Image (cartoon, rainbow, N blue to C red; front, side, top):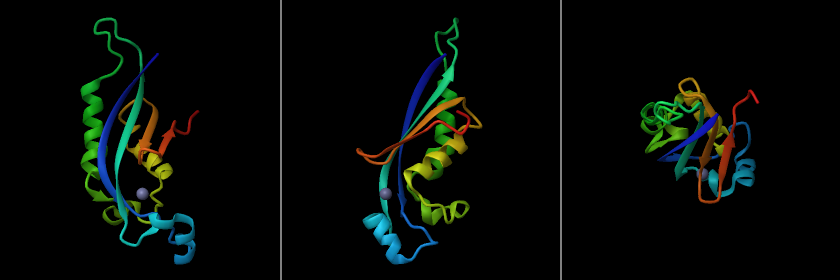
Length: 134
Ligand SMILES: [Zn+2]
């Protein structure tokens, strides 16, 4: 089994906020990431897909399909949008890197044999998710 990685990058706004907590509690927990008007990141999303090497091509993954899925499910959906303002389906979701990693996984996993997904929020923050079935 070989693991093939591919990355995409996109800009997205968000605000860390838990509606179940008071404004003071939110400020205490999230600091400036709780600023009412939000802020943005240049996110990098990397997926690792598992596959056998095809002896005919030497490849383990369908790269055009991976690019199509990442473009359609992630970049076109989220690039230059505000996660907390523009997606009613995610209303109330705390847009932490941890939760975003799971949301991105759920969007991609039906289409690709995902082994690992990594979300880089900043140069210093990264989140990795391997799915629930490990
Ligand atoms: Zn942030």
